[in-house]
Length: 354
Picture 1 (tube, rainbow, N blue to C red):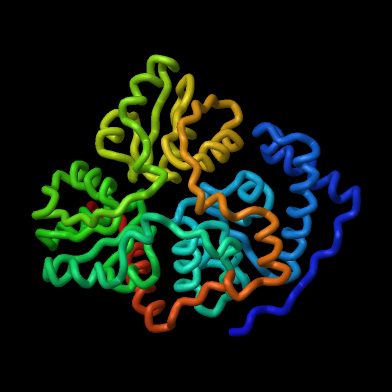
Picture 2: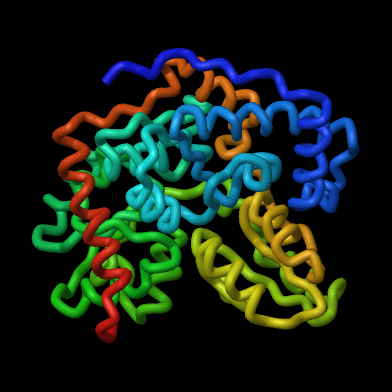
């Protein structure tokens, strides 16, 4: 399918820039410390992007780790990998401009083969996704014949195609429990720390019952469990939440463990003097704007891949998309990758006991 032809956005009028600046401020950018001149610069871009979305029937899904001006200024929906995958599959848009990283855009393409999928920052990869290949999965299958492969969604389409079911940090415990109902051994790829946390939660023995690949996320592997006690003393009553990809030592020291969507729901449902979200910094920005009445203690790491996308690159993808921004997944790979993703939807939403 050829790229859609170049479409230029008109320049906004001064009144339109002023109105858009006010909208961005009200959405939460002012609360995050944005100055008037910063808001005005962003407003010129967000106005054009939102204009072009309508003109070209495009949608902009954005992962919660994206920059605040993308989440609050141009995203049609935000969320974790599971939510974005579901909503992209339900969309009737002609074009998906995915503000995230490559494996997410590939998942959107697998679920939407007839839509044009663009990744504004083509170099936005993922250390975890790049830690495993399709050949590695085939090697695990040979070494552990008969064991089903549960693969974390943070992987390439080629790796998904070699898997039996995809999981996210939110639904992995439920799905693995269902797999263990009929299998004495399960292979989990590629996040080693998440695999260790799952083994502990499920009461399974690493190696003999749960085989885990040795991959890691450059953001979550660097959090220090020893610092948790320090922050508890500094902020009495603080509730500390950590992502499933953090180390088992850190997970054992916090109040809640889960995916990004789980963490946001937990904050919304609980009252505490303050909260700490141990994950990528983008979630903290989203939390502060979603819950302005609550206090958040910063302890986060920036993901260089997630932060590679900015408003100017989103605008370019809409106005004059480059070949490098276009996401293509070979038909044979996409067909095989789609089934384990759909299997995830089936198992995650199965209401029978797990």
